[in-house]
Image 1 (cartoon, rainbow, N blue to C red):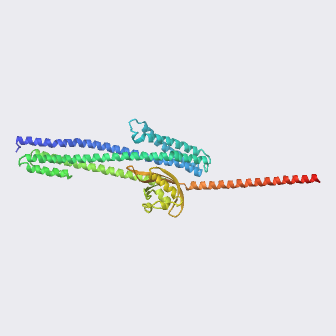
Image 2: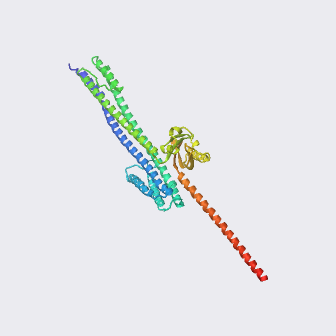
Image 3: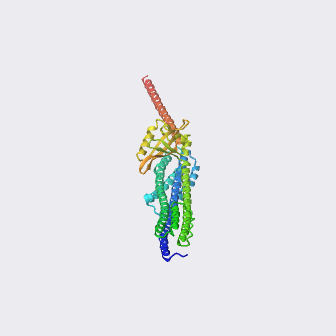
Length: 444
């Protein structure tokens, strides 16, 4: 039997009232899906930027090593290695120049434009200085070569690495911001879905009180099922055999439930996929640190070790578990502690510090390092220090041998001077005797 005309009109009004929030929900869903895709693209772009900075930083550190090794060993084969690494660095520099030439790309966020230009300049100076070092035929112990190496490391190399660290920090902040935007957009979509479901439920309940007892059971059924949907139970099995608009409504809710279930499933898959990608990215950065040729370590503000990379473990013959949470001081000979403590205090005051010291291995052996430490900040508060160091035992040994050779030459020079003085005294005595002999002969 067909429903009365008045009831049909009311049901049409009820359906229209329920379709309005559904339409709004659909529009918001499309908009939020678009925003989510944009945020995912932005997050992927920031990830690529972080990867680029890390690759440049690793390559730059590699370019500093061949010239230093050439000075230590005098082996010109390191020039070939330098040219190979230099080609890789030139590709990175070309990428930076392309980005600087791109007028649509925003560079000047937090000084990124300056970082890129300064990095290009630093690389030019590092390359020029390295080639000048390789032009020296006998670099071992050569003062000019050592001065050039010191200029390359301290004037260009370490500042460039520091700028890359800052650039990486800024990119990481932007990456975190993009990640937060993606999370916020996802939560907003979830909120819209829940609110829309609640609105549909309230609308159904509202019209249930307006209609006759004939529709009460059907409306209560709709209320129960829509409440279940609002709670996340997408069953989609509402069955109403009223042969009227309520049956159509039940069918629409079943479809909506299926669509919501599919949407939630797709959203969960995307979140799981992004989580997996982020985990891979984190593992990649961890591998970069672990495989770095530098000794990398961190301390808290009390001087307790919080992290060392694999290179540091191999150098000390300690594992991370053996050192974490323990003070660094037992690893430093007592005569070198004042220098290290002064550098540590400087870093905790917010400044970068570079120093040379010796370090005790687990087996009692001692080796020399040159280290640079910089403060670690969290929301502007210094929470520890980050250190980079390099084994310079071979350099120190070469310096000591050179000093011994200089001392030997100095002793030889002094002995030669003493012999010349003695010879002069003997010649003077001979002249005096000859003069005395002449005088005695004239007197006779």
